Amino acid sequence: MPCFFTMVSAFLQIPYGYLIDSKGFEKILPFCIFAVLIGSLVYWLCDNHIFIGISRLIIGAGCASSYILVIFIATTYFKKTIIPLLISLGEISVGLGDYFAGNVYLYTFKYLGWHMSNIITIIMISLLFFYSMFLIRKIYKIKFALPTLTANRIKVPFKEIIHHIIKLAQKPTNIAIFIYSFLTWGIIMTFAGYWGKSYYINMHNYSKEYALSIQEIYWISFLIAVLIVGTCTNVIQQAKKYIIILTLIGFIAHLIFIIPILFSYSMIIVITILCGISGSGIALGFFIIQYLNSQDKGLIISLNNLFVVLGAMVGQVIFSYLISFDFNKIFKLPNNINPYFYSGIIMLLICSILALLAVIFIIRGVSVYQKNEYNNP
Image (cartoon, rainbow, N blue to C red; front, side, top):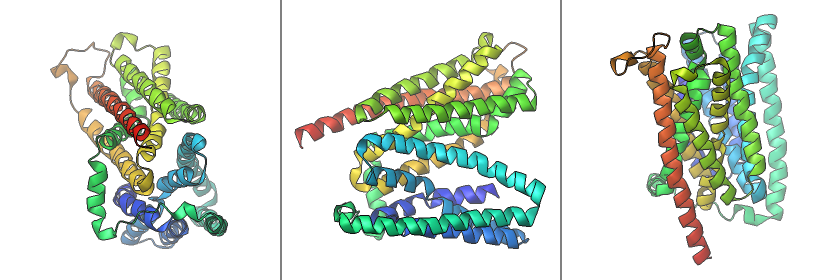
């Protein structure tokens, strides 16, 4: 069932980006929340497998726009100097929401039962829907007073959107950011999002509880780093500097990961924290790409988010195949090293190297863009 949610979310990224750019987010936000509400009602009231699958599709369709809307609103209605902070707060909200929503639902289901847990969920979504309607009314008043907020909306007809997307995707710097986002989020969701616990259990013989606690350290370090990066970044020059530093940290951390002699408890904790810190550069990727494509924010953000979603999906699948391969066939490892999960870690190292190369192209592209902007104000 989770694949229904993920697939429809990925499929709708670009349509939502176009609609946000062309129509504004005011109509999209309440519609998406209402779709989640309908999907949740269907999920609660229907016990047929087909309808449960349909409910997941509807919920996925409603949630698909959430991250795009967060970044679009942050980059459109607030000062440029706090855009990185707002993107980081959005990233943190998504992460915390994912963690707490699952745990709250599990807790209410365990102690209050099926019906009450779904009633609580539906009440929360309903309150969010009515709150969104209230916010939209406020936004309309602001736009009426400041009509320039709608002046930069995309004017491309929907039938020509494919050609417009191709045009955006042909820009080398955009391609580099797509690759960076794909690889970075792929690393995060492959390891911290899914396979990390199994790695610690099979590679280091930790208990399930202990392995899970280390995995949570990864997420905590990621969220704290995202907040710090967002707070410290005010201009594009800082974003260029921080993204290369964070990517280098990730490369070094994954390089240490493959050195068996350094597999001590304290070193594992340090590496885990460094990996979490390096992932915070994902927020800078969104900041840079909207800076380079200010006329197509919704569409370019949705394209980048599409690569983020695909990175998570592809990374987990490839890792699952690699851990069935015995690395001893290539190089003889010490007997205390699990050769199958070692193959998976090699994949993460390769991804971090490719991400570093992508960042080099990003920095070069941003510098060229700044030079052109300076020469042609």
